Image 1 (cartoon, rainbow, N blue to C red):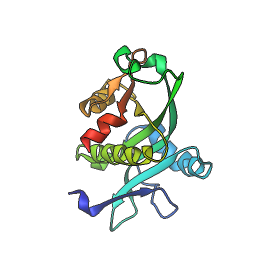
Image 2: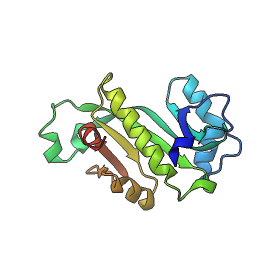
Image 3: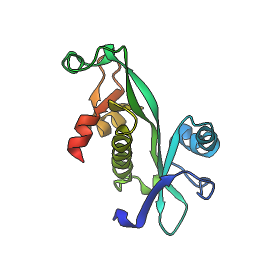
Image 4: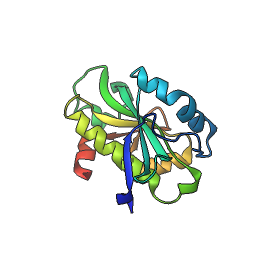
Amino acid sequence: MFSSYAVEPLSKEHDILGFNCGVKELDIYLKERASQEVKKKITAVYVLHRKDSKKIIGYYTLSSFSIELINLPDEIKKKLPKYPLLPASLIGRLAVDRKFQGKKIGTHLLIDALIRSYRLSKEIGSFAVIVDAKNEITKKFYKKYGFKQFRKKSLKLYLSMNTIEKLI
């Protein structure tokens, strides 16, 4: 099914105007702020579209992040260096247009983000991929793929690069 789709960095050629995921802040971000944040090197935005069209079906963002060691579970902490902060990759936003929801597009985007993050971790150290789930529904989505909760932040989740390596 996904062979007719492409995921690539956001560019001026992509049609962002018709994108509507049903979450106003995610729609506004793509239409009003994403290009500026890419230009300023704040984040990288990856968009999914059909190969025969530049209309965006879904997108996600990736950026650098740090994890405070104290927020990780004890069984993880004892295996890591005692640095106060560990490098990580952040999936800051992930959204799918309403017309395509329920068709595994979100899963496809998540897997693409995890593979891309893992590959990049070989060049720039990154312990894990972090997500901030917006609510309990999105938390369940991420947990289904192995993400674990931070001790103190119930909607902040992580998936270690070692786990991602085993998955791919």
